Amino acid sequence: MQTIIKMKNGGELLFDLYPEKAPLTVKNFMELVNKGFYNGLTFHRVVRDYVIQGGSEDNTCMCPTDFTITGEFTENGFDTGLTHKRGALSMARDDDFNSAGTQFFVAHKDAHKLDGRYAAFGQLVEGFDVLDAIATVDTAPPEAENRPLQPQIIESIRIVK
Picture 1 (cartoon, one colour):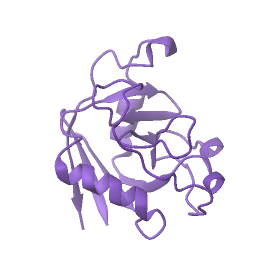
Picture 2 (cartoon, rainbow, N blue to C red):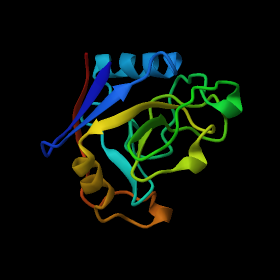
Picture 3 (cartoon, rainbow, N blue to C red):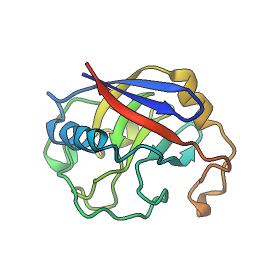
């Protein structure tokens, strides 16, 4: 199973999804994708050589969701075997292990310090040039959430076979 993130500028990111390893996370992501939730949102946080983060309803890191899912990662009792190598698709959360909802991130470079602590559920297979382009845009400083100075708009996300 795969998903394609199409950017407003025409770039595309193609990911393999792993429902057999992270079933709750993939199910949640697919439901949001199928509702069109992510269409028109942005990658609102960009940290070069680390992650690009999106999926916030108000395009900020602090936007709460009205639901959460169980975190499927080792520190929370789930051994998925997935790591945060370059291109990993994973759920963002706050300090509560079970606080992920809509926000996700893509590892720009290997981020193994996140292994076992965040719910990876997919892997980029095509579009590394697009990932690099997003991850290297000019941003506001960390105290301003590393917000891209030019919005990185997700035109659509869809599930493909």
